[in-house]
Each structure stands twice: as C-alpha cells, then as structure tokens.
Length: 487
Image 1: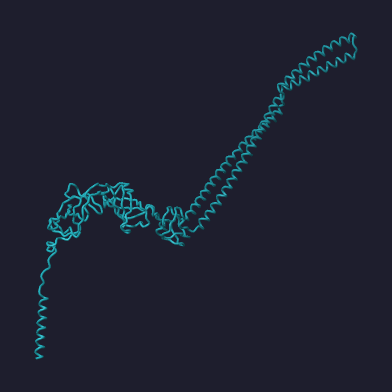
Image 2: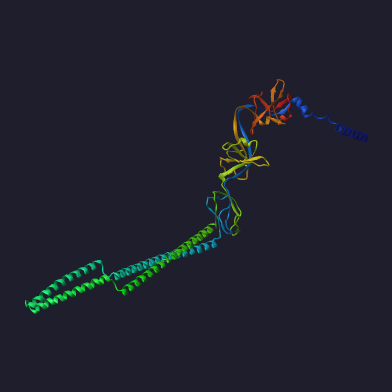
C-alpha cells in the first residue's frame, strides 16, 4: 500500500508539473497599444496658460569672450633674460617692468658713447676758442696795418706838401714885409749917403744906415727863399722814400686781410666740431635706447594670463615672454547672419549668458557691427561690451547674447514649447473641456518673433489670454483628440 501511495503521488506531481509548463508556454494576449490606452484615458500632456504682455524682439549672438586690451610681452632685442618678476595671475600696472635682460653690453656701450660725447664737447669748446682768438688776432693785425698805411700816406702828403696853405701865406707875408723893410732901409741908405757927402752926418751914422740896408736885403732874400721852398714842396728823394713806405703799408694791409681768411677755416672747424657733438649725442641716444630695450614693460594694466619664459633663458626679438589681459576690457565677439544683422545697431541693450557660469545674466551693449562679413558663411561679426564687470567672465569662454532690437506691446505670448513648427507652418493645440472630456483643438498660427521663452504670433487669431495650450506631449496630438492634462 505504501508503495502504491508513493507511485500515485509521483504521478500527481509529474502531471501537475506538465500542466504548469504547458500554461507557462501558452501564448500571452497582446498588451494594448499607447493609442488604445489613450483612446480611453486620453493623451497625456502638460499645459500652460496664455498671457498678454510685451514681447522683446531679440537677435541671438553666439561667440567667444575675448579682451580688447590684451598684449603679448616680448623683447625688442636678443639677449639673456636676467630676471622675470611676474607669474600667472599677478596684477601689473601700465609701464611696470615685468622682465629684464642682461645689461652689461648695453651699459658698456652707453659709457663709451657718453665718453665720446664728452670728448666731442671738449673739442667743440677748443675749436670755438681758437676761432675767437684767431678773429681777435686777424682783426688786430688789420687795424695795425690800416693804421700804418694811414700814417704812411699822411707822411707822403707832408713830404709832397711840406707846408700848409697857412705856412705859405705867412711866408708870402714875410716876403712882403721884408721887401717893405728893404725899401725903407734903401731910402734911408740913399738919404744918409747924400747927407754924408754934404757932411751933414758922421761916418758912423752912415755906416749904421748902410748896415741896416744890408740886413734888410738879407731878410728879403731869406724870406724869398723860404717862400720858394714852400712853393717847391719836398725833395724828390723824400717823396720816393715816403711813397715806398705807403706801398709797404698797403702790402701789409693786404696780407692782414688775407690772413683773415683763417677765420673761415676756424668757423669750418667749429661746424665740424658741432657736427661731431651731434653725432656723439645721437650715439648716446641710441645707446640709451638699447639700454631701455633691456627692460620689458607692460603697456597696459591687467593680469598676467600666461608666462612662457624663465630667468637665464636666451630670448630673441619678438619671442613671447608673457601675456597680460585687462579683465575690465572683456567683450563678446560673435556671429550674426546677414538676414538678422540689419536689425542690429550700436547702442542696443544685450543680455549675455556665459555657459561656464550658468544662468547668470550680464548686461551688455552693442559696441560695434563689423562693416563686412564672411563670404563663406555670410555671417557678420558683432562686438558686444559687457557692462557688468566680473572676474568670472574670462577670455576664451563661450557666450550667448540676446540683442534687444525692439518691443511689441500687449501681444499674446505663447510658450515656446507650445508651438510646433514644421515645413514652414506653425500650429498650437488649445485644450478645451466639452464636459465629457478634455480635447485638443488645433490652431494654425503665424510666428512673428520669438525669444528664449515665448513666441509672438500674428493677429488676428482666435487665441486669447487665459487659453490653455499643450506643451509637453503635443507631438502626439491631432485635432479633436482626447487628452489627459497633468497640470
């Protein structure tokens, strides 16, 4: 009995297992499709409510943050970098020395040039002194020669005309006086002679009259000789000697004037010395300039964004040593299509968002619209100044800017997610309650403008503020279909 019971039990287990296996392997009925489920419960959607308001007309600009004041510091001359005083992140002033080259050669050249300048200045002073002394000497020699000529000519005049007109008049007067005296003494002589013959006077009286007569004759002859000498002039030998002295003095004056040409030579020496001083000064200036080139200065104030050289390194002209960026001059440089650039003008407000910073909005202004665009992309560059200064906005970051080109007042604002656009047409599904269920009603609209949140549609249209429209799930809707709004 026990054995039969065990066998029956095994048969029951086997038959039960076969039944379960057959049930598991039997085909399952198909699950209802989404459309079948939505036919009963409605298409699940999310909704939003239309409102009236102001719609900004915006044009999106995308591009990179860059800096208007950004320089790469480099040396103008080759040399060994003696020191570099800044690192990445350091703040520098405009004109601050950020690096210095070895100055031994430059300072030696400057010392040599300065010594040359001092020597040239000394030679110029010597040339001026020599020129001054030479002029004094030549002027003095000319004056002496002129004086000697004047004296010789005066002596020649005296020799040729020993007496003056006054002397001749005096001599003529003396001759006249002597002749008158002779006539008087001659009359006395004749009268006394007659008296002596008559015995009226003594012999002594006659002798006295005779003596006086002879003296008067002598006086007349002397006066006449003096007058003749005055009329005749100097002797020929005296005139010849005096003329020779005049000729000698004239030669001396010519020689003195010829020596005055040395003044021109001395002036040439002064001009040459002045030119040498100018050249030496230029050499000093060049040496000072070369020395100044050993100092590498930052032309702008800002922060060091990179450093690419170290002390002891030999650098060449133009080799980058460091980059300095003025963080206060950052701006957005982006592209705008040729169709939209016509609406952008300098001065328009811009909302700037930087992807790396998140949802923070920075106020900006259109600073410049480039006059020409790319022939390949047909895009134009726009420079947008960022008015809200922030150290978080750095060159190289990607940014987006919404340029506000205008505002439409009191228009129907349709959420951007509620508008479906395809093949150039736009449509919106409005959710209505027909008392039995919520249904979606399709409205064809014309989109005029949009921003990041809303779309402005053209009027007239049947939409109004307060209407409920489908947002999420609208791609599953058709006109009149039953819906199941989540909110």
